[in-house]
Length: 401
Image (tube, helix red, strand yellow):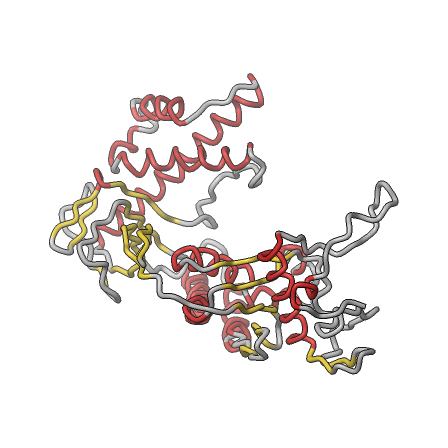
């Protein structure tokens, strides 16, 4: 069985001086158009309570190009500018539906430098990519081949803070969905990055700790440089390269790990973690950020969809750590320094393995009968207990005490 999906293939490329200058100019124009469109939409709402869409901002862009102050917008391809108008449109759609916060302006120093080209703004011929307003194709390092007969529908060019240039090609791809069986519960942690309900523990590589000394020295050198100087720019790039090295190793490890899980298992159950709230603990913020739990979940979401697997996310309030996976009794307290504990039924539990088994049981309960996994607790407004949910161990034939 196979499935057709849209996949983005990212490659590194090395532009010539002329291409780098043209792309840098395009990045600046894209950022400017985005900010101006966002300002126009914000003023229309705050002053006149009017929602203007893409068509209105596109008409504004035509007028901006005819002014003397913004005539330089005609020097770059018009397609990335039109795509820059669609981005605030999507951002406002997410904002009005309460899926995201209000969009903010792009910064010249902190925002991602990128430009998006559609089929009318690039030429793809004989495996070579040439962008609009350019005469030479990009020197791309083909680290992996594109799918047979694939032709990109969208091309996104970007430059990261470390000065590396990337091109992302969005293509149609066919993914063969191989059959798989079984289910696994996953408990995320810090000592072990992942603990599976089978008892397997995946060691946390701690990529940030491996380069922490180099990063500290580079950041100290950056702080000593005078603002606006060429030496400060060099020091900033050095810091960015260390950060990129850490992020690349982390991303590579997560992709290998999630690919193995998706290929071997039909049903994967994970816990809904409030990472944004957890990093407010300043003692654990660095370790939690380095573990990249949210990135792990994002990768699992689209890979399970590609391969036809089931991904179940149980409620974050499920007391998976304090709940005995054998008898179902709930321990009163479970400090972080307690790694093993003994239940009153006599079962000895590893903290993380027990949590993974409870997460799996809760996920199977959802699959079997559509049961909720939020534990019973008092309502803060009504002073009454919420609706009692069926214990997840009931579906496994385990007696509940």
